[in-house]
Amino acid sequence: MIGTLMIKEFTVITLFPEFISDYLRIGVVGSAVDKGIIKLNLIDLRDFSESRNGRIDDASYGGGPGMVLAAPPVRAAITSAKVNASEDSHVMYMSPQGACFDQSAVEDLRDLEHIIILAGRYEGIDQRLIDRDIDSEWSVGDYVLSGGELPGLIVIDAITRTIPGVLGSDESAKNDSFSNGLLDFPHYTRPAVIEDAQVPQVLLSGNHAEIARWRRKNALGRTYVERPDLLSNKFLSDGDRELLREFLQENDFL
Image (cartoon, rainbow, N blue to C red; front, side, top):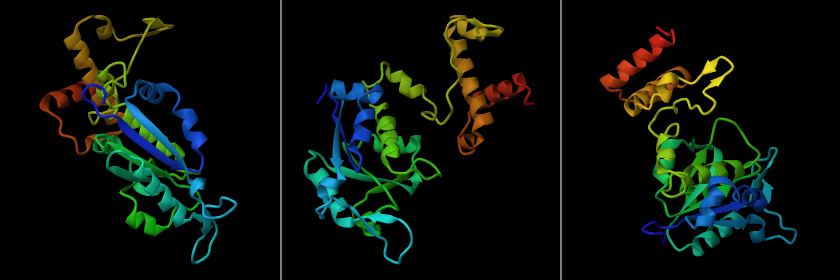
């Protein structure tokens, strides 16, 4: 325990543990590990191979190109991950067929105490494993990657940064894009003028109410322009509608 927070645990089952470990030593996630806020376990799927040469794949029934991760070693790896965990475990499988992993998924998953991430390879895994051993299946986008390691890292990073104490300020996570259903507002730093481009005057005013209003207006406007789909099911107050109208007028969209 850290204060009143339960340490969150991630276990990644992968053919390439070094791929995961190299990334997790740096940045926000690496800092969270150093602070003891999260714990990371890596399981090499080849350790559970039933063959002498460490093979973990087999041909697909029905023929066709590509290999499938064999069921016995994958199931054994999942069982091992659960046995070594101190809390109930949730098994996630990263695949192109999964549900879209977005900020709402982060919020749904962040309170789980132990997440086991299965990083698929080749043509995937035996469907019977998905039916019996996988609790949720996730995709990070409508494209195909060589394996589930990168998506798994995305899941760990996205969830970790929402844990209190991980970021320098908990407000940082609250202001991230998508955290409130909107894209983030524009950010500026020194110098105040770069060639002929100036920082918006309101941000230099010191008027916190006006700054907050500007940020809300530009978050709404940026979302309307770049990702209108995010606004399609979002309730906008009268105040938000007025801010959006103001943004569109100022930027010649009306």
